Image (cartoon, rainbow, N blue to C red; front, top):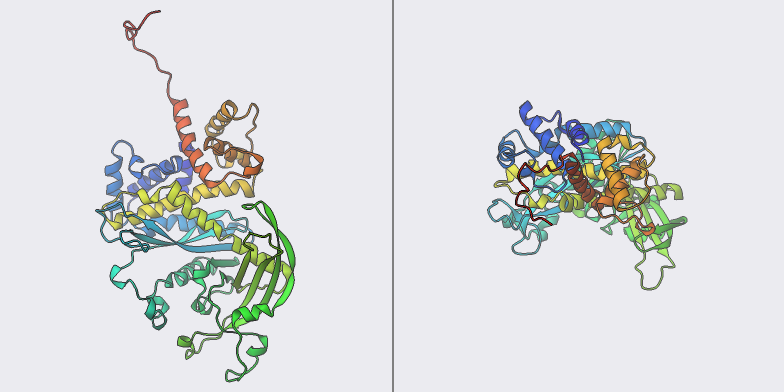
Length: 478
């Protein structure tokens, strides 16, 4: 995209970053602006002719860390959260960054079962609105596993959660509570099955911060009948799956499964329970967390197709069908962070970063995370606000260049007035076909289109080639 739009976005997200020197801040703004216009380009090419040296000097500064890199962006994210309507969905997840080809980079740890696979782990907390539009990153944790501590699974029950890698989920919850707990906005912290931890539900949090995770542990629970009895009651406490099996059927509804081209009929159950503490925690005087179990299961599934089936645990109310469907819709936003990680790896090519030390690598990763979030914002914003004017996300030069390309290569007639028109035009440049069955453009075609649009704009700015006098004297004549 053009320098004007990208520079404005970069200034807004990094203009107040705490790098200890205004010159470093200006350098960061310039780098981010160039990265936004050339998604996936080498970061060393973003600072002119002496780019590699300038980038190395910037990321070598002690004040340039992942925390300082995200300082301004996090502030802007909190502002966006306070301005949007509805609940805020804070989604957390972990991904592996594979740097196995970086033989000279020391300090990396194992990232998979492969003997030679080396890299880092990244746990991110991405906040979106109820329309799944990414608002920004609130938290980012980067670490390398210690090979000497590999294989401690047998002792996991005897160790505190703060001593284990699973403590990352509590860290994400604490960050959401820290930055949004006092905002007055309702916040839902969402995690996959790995985050199904008793400590998560038992952890203290603000009244406006809720939890929503997918069930993994068939743990012991108390129903409303059990909870009214004493702790020493001889009644056998049910397991979670048995409890939800006896829950109320709230109703059924149809859900379109786009990836399979069919409509699934779903049955919804819910039940309120209290999670009993694990054996290692029963001696602690902690009140049993109260949650709602929401089960959604497909009925009459076609032969040869795996039926849809989720069991969710949440601190949100889910006593009726409308509330349960809202909980299910909130959890469907979890795939947004999967798209974020895909954009970061495949689009921004974070695993191709070339630095000699991890201290230089960390802030560069944080910077590319913001670039990935901005690409996703453009893609999702076009879906949530398709009729918004295109001038909100582009300049006149960008719109005119994209329009001319579409008219020359795609359609005989095309109008470009709204955000949806502009994003589709950019996606067309990025090899989006635009057929009826294709739906709306995805992040891949958008980031490819952004790169292509930058080259098109650069070409239009170039002056036509003018041969110098005498250069044609040896040309072949007819």
